[in-house]
Image (cartoon, rainbow, N blue to C red; front, side, top):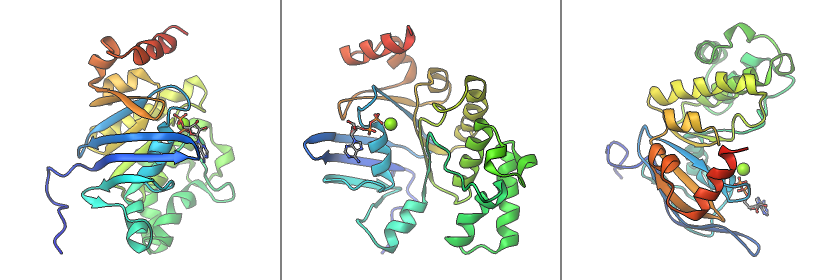
Length: 253
Ligand SMILES: Nc1ncnc2c1ncn2[C@@H]1O[C@H](COP(=O)(O)OP(=O)(O)O)[C@@H](O)[C@H]1O
Ligand SMILES: [Mg+2]
């Protein structure tokens, strides 16, 4: 069967009428979201609005109750080998870096390519060093995670995700656990990735990043997408009361 992979018109992420409940909580409500190839989408909204759950359904860390999610034209199956493969197309970076404490920085980046992609040690090491170079921490390769700053660890976490050559990168509040002086070094790696054409969905309240790097801002409240607009339009002229109220709070604190 020919896959529609090569078509430039196929969105990289496509969510159609996606619903999910946690018990009586309707955490994702009829979500329709398309992210084109190479696009950067920033997702913002109050705590508890479903942003993390949205990310987690895209790589099937969470199942959905109804609707469809497709990555590069391939509908996510419920389970099996195909799911594992599609999931490895989607890299994810969390607020907490989750590096393996007892492995060195370079070993952390080599691990998945060796296990999942069956790369040999030499290949994996060379690729890992290139990625560490790219995120600016190659000189820390033989240290352990606890010896690095939070900003450095988060950059390693990004390198580790990139080591699987994902088609899409999801970032869930990647800078919210960092001290202020380390936020920019992580955002700058993300801005570079965006400029290189990576498709990205980024949950963040960093408005400078959103204005600089995002094609669109998606505003969520109570499990629904309330606004979906270009950054300048969204920040300067939000249309819903929910978004106006939310922006008022984050701009004036
Ligand atoms: N595994 C879970 N079981 C039950 N409720 C959950 C679970 N994960 C998240 N929730 C609830 O779903 C809602 C949305 O959570 P989340 O997606 O983490 O929001 P956000 O990332 O926007 O803060 C919250 O009310 C949260 O308490
Ligand atoms: Mg969250």
